[in-house]
Length: 90
Image 1 (cartoon, one colour):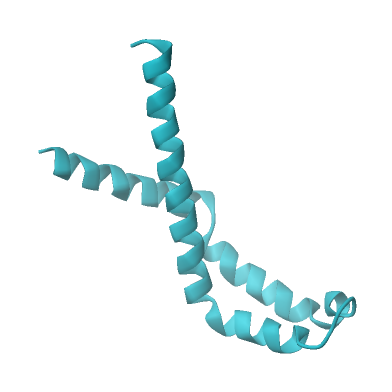
Image 2 (tube, rainbow, N blue to C red):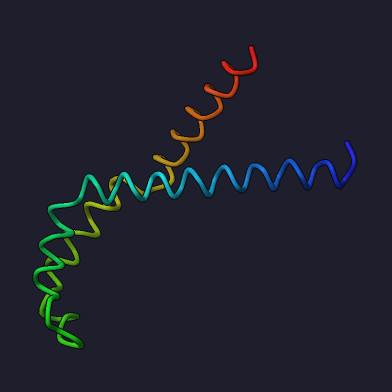
């Protein structure tokens, strides 16, 4: 396989990974909607004070988001994608 062909395949793989990351983030935000709302309520009307006034809500939101946006979740999504691609190829 030539260098150009390899580069094209890797580019496609990166685009797929970016799409999967985006899907993962969207799913996480949906799953953590209650924490997002709490943080937004706390942050409303604040500027710099949001950092210390909403620390608790920010930690809760980040903890929730991390459950759905980590490397193991991404790897699982990649496996599912590859299985779907194999089924399409058959």
